[in-house]
Amino acid sequence: MSVKIYIPGDSGAIAVGADKVAARMAQTLKARGLDARIIRNGSRGLYWLEPMVEVETDRGRVAYGPVKTSDLDGLLDAGLLEGGNHPLSLGLTEEILYLKRQTRLTFARCGITDPLSLEDYREHGGLTGLTNAIAMAPEAIVAQVTESGLRGRGGAGFPTGIKWKTVLEAQGAQKYIICNADEGDSGTFADRMIMEGDPFVLIEGMAIAGIATGATKGYIYLRSEYPHAVDMMNRAVKVARENKILGTSVLGSSHAFDMEVRVGAGAYVCGEETALLESLEGRRGVVRAKPPLPAHKGFLGQPTVVNNMVSLASVPIIMEKGAEYYRDFGMGRSRGTIPIQIAGNVKYGGLFEAAFGMTLGELVEDIGGGTATGRPVRAVQVGGPLGAYFPRELFDTPFDYEAFAAKDGLIGHAGIVVFDDSVDMLKQARFAFEFCAIESCGKCTPCRIGSTRGVEVVDRIRDGIEPESQINLMTDLCNTMKFGSLCALGGFTPYPVMSALTHFPEDFRPGPRMASPVNQAAE
Image (tube, rainbow, N blue to C red; front, side, top):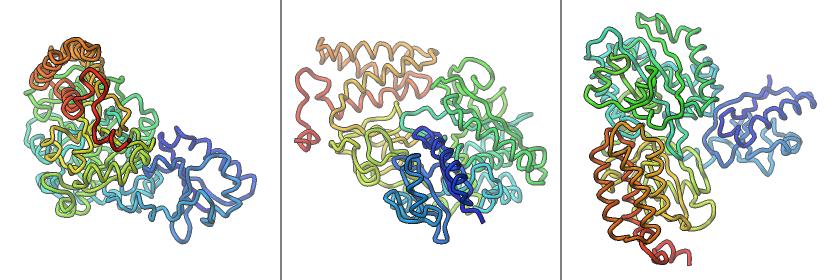
């Protein structure tokens, strides 16, 4: 039987040469007359080790990485196909500490299976949740999701079950399930990893949502910057349709559900659910005033569930294992697991799925290994470009929605971006305003005008023009944006600005930066 060699087809791995490694591996195997089959799996999320090549052995899968094309002859000479020892050997994949410390529920199959093999998917527990859901009443499905404690993983943290219940009870000729996969936050890649590495789990989650709410049509709204994910999702939907997972009779049941992929045009604001709906309907992505809520009047004026991709991909495990199983992970009102994406100036960048509750310090220093430069960590931004900057003094904050809110921060899509002590926080505050100005849909005045005025105010602070007066003006401007903007783009821009000012005031005043504990540590 052919030996299975796994080389990721994930775009993060491709960016560092995985396609070249796969092509050269195929040529080398053929030239040597070796019996082996290459499988392009998803990434395991250990991006500092990509391209990570795995070989299936009697002991389990053995990993090697990061592998270059020039390494292949040496690896094969060292007995790669038998899991032989080599300087690039990482040992048994499941024993790698970064993976072993995780609690993989949503990402349980990612990097393990062939993304487009339905047989692989079933062998690893796939479709069990959907099969269970088909045997239940819609109200019972909604109750199970509600009891699990699952909340929106896109950032708002709204209880998924309540949203589903609202759509179930709403009256409408047609109902829709919309997957918000418009992943645009800095330091985030969880959506892309699932779509490229385990697309059937998203399809299964959306089908369950359709059965639970009475929706028969679904759309995945995906960003144009993800061509590999677009291709993978389209191919997976085709496979699912051919195998009766989608269509007029889901898995032979009386339930109908079908779906398609729609690609956005690169507007960050279309990650906001109502702007997304405008775009999906063929119009410019502009935020709608609420009410009405999308659950009552969403896509084409019909009751619509708009859920983040990770939220929907978490549903199958809940329907397979039960609400109590999922709820047992986490802390407080933050139940289950969260795929934390560690990026920026960090030694071990990648995806780390864990139950809510680990502290920010553990994630940055222990799991992430500190900065890649070796300099002290000065600031960490959590939650994308609209997230607050946390100093080391707040590293004891547990990863929990309420705990972050209590420190004037937000988890958002769970992206962590690390900065060392060379970062200029005044420049980071300026970037937040500038980003908002560029990405604003322009509908509301606080966001449209406030962001542009914010850039001007920061520039005056930088130039030493009445800094205290300008800081007061910036604070007032942030207050107006926070409470006067229509959506989170303008409403959350004050988080990075004010956290930078609050925790790093020395960067906003004339003269050399005042000595901070971080800088003292560097000395």
